[in-house]
Image (cartoon, rainbow over all chains, first blue to last red; front, side, top):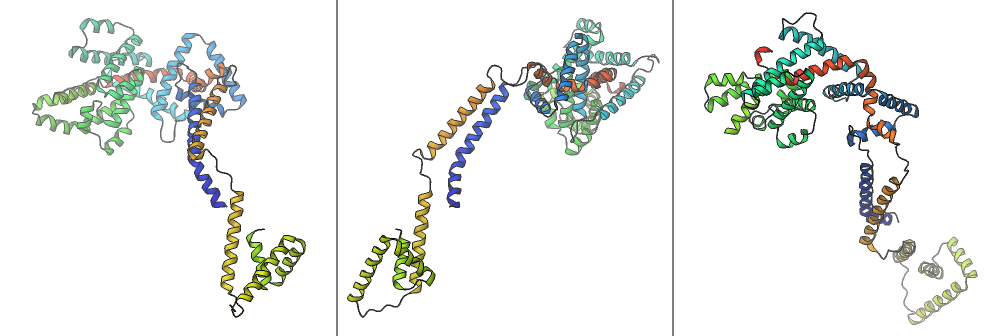
Length: 298
Length: 171
């Protein structure tokens, strides 16, 4: 009798599995179509948030509802400021997240303190004659304008920017200048990325693209496909890059790792040793672009 | 009457039943006229056989009897199983599969319609916004408390994005 029941169950297993699959798909479809179209939360985030929401107590939910009403009562400019700060926090959390998950608030606070100390040192090293009483926000402006001018120099040298456009942009206040620079840098990065990555990042905010570019360099080395395939990272090199705290340290380390192989390759083309050294001494972004163009030319 | 009862009756007439079983068969014969009729027929057959082959004296084979009884019991079990087995659906396996799948699709569509009905008991519009901005709301204390530090961290982030544009000598 028992074997008969087993046989009956086996004969029903296929249809039952199919039915369950249809039910699961149906439920997923229902769930997906019921998600709200909130502008600043993706559906995946919403699902994750909803899971957390479902685990909260009634009091915790009421507290969040009150916070939401307070948030809506804030003036628009204060909300915009808080959203910018929150975006920085999100990227920081993403960068500091480890295998154990999101970093703690203490870990984030320690990272912020470390960044401020680094900023002070950076100012002393890069602009020794800066006023001693300069505030850190002004120091950031000063340091950023140095970088913007260097960036525009490269664009102008390559014929991608006219002298007039350069002067016009540099006359803008720093926040507006930063936006323009980030957009141009995003375009430059998207040109180097392969089509799939570029398409995935096309609609992302420029700072998110910059963060993604840093992550890609840590994973693949060079941003351009030709150069990353010609000089791939070894697992050991990848481990070294993963441990570095800043993007510029990643670039410096990559240069040290790959310069001998690049030198060998260019000498074999052949290329004049003096030109090779000039090429290798370029800023990292310029080096990446030059190598990609050289490899594409064959 | 099932075949096993007939065999028990023959064992009784053959005199091979143990005393306890024998008493049960005798009680059965007293109560059941059908059993008595069968017993009479068996006796007639056995007597006739005895007259036709008077010199034939085949010793009783215990092994044969045991196997016959086992076969009868197996048959009895098979009949009982057949009686308890559910009838096979006229639809057959493919038909039942299609029916189950169709029922599941109908169930999923019904669930969708139920959840989408006007006034469905899902999240309120306010709760939807709260859930959509849950991480922001939970981070607001930190954002408000460390606003200036986050501004500077944003500045550092900006510098870092353009560090690659600087000549090595300036770093």
